[in-house]
Image (cartoon, rainbow, N blue to C red; front, top):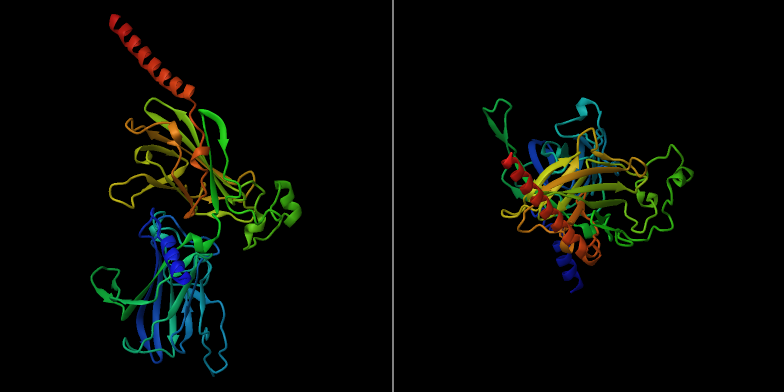
Length: 431
């Protein structure tokens, strides 16, 4: 019974209502047969709209069905060779039963590259840049089947992107991939193709969220902070209390640690990322919001970061400053979700904690008079995601509230403005 509920929870957590079709598809295309196996091109395509794979990149693993070995690879490498002592003469690239493969770094010699390889495992999200949402490598497999009937599909695929969170399906045979020649006049196809689908589950990635949301407004002096211990307070004893302390802890020429949780600024929320939503101004037909993303992690720059917001007024967004914006339309009749990301070579890297560790934007939204209000926290987002992970939100009763007097003042100002315009128009008519 416990196992049954664990499976149900895992599958439920893997479904993202803001990206219901998001997944990473790994496709194996056998391009040719060899005397003892085959040569395949493995293509990893990230169909997730706003969740990318950042540095240090993806790690792909599987288990061979029988006694297969990897003779050679192009565009990637196995992290361990394993025990190849049984081979005389030519020694395989990897003899492990469960190989682990990583992408090559940029700048490797051309004879070690194929198309879409060698980016250090970094893969963009589909919504941000579909042209760089693909990663490929070539693998020559030996001691394997040499026909469609004798090939055994690998088992137990695993994917780190770069951390935990992905669960992969079993390999499934699909119709062979069709390729078009560069001149567009001839089609060829793979000898055999199988797919593996990997989906992300935030619960598997971490027990706690990795970001939180704070709020403020022009009509209330109260600032609603991130909930206390939003991202867990288990690192309270290891956090950094000030910018000055960071140099004494690790020195000026510090190296990046893969375990960056111990390098987070001490805060009440203990999150590496905070997103602040400020309702800034109110116009007659528009209203203005300022968003600030702050990095509290001293050991990590966030490259190609993405921010997703859900708010009912995003269908009427008029202008976005300093960020790129793309509406997300997971459902036909709903347009309340959008993705923000940095301008290339300007602010597409969120730098480590410190004076430069933030990015900011302002939004101008056109009011829909049938729904617009500042009451009951309507002006604040329903959900915020950073790099594909949902952020911890304050409780609704803690949102900056609209005082009764403020509501009447807003109405009075609007009425007075209309009255003055009418008087001015009448004066012009008399002239």
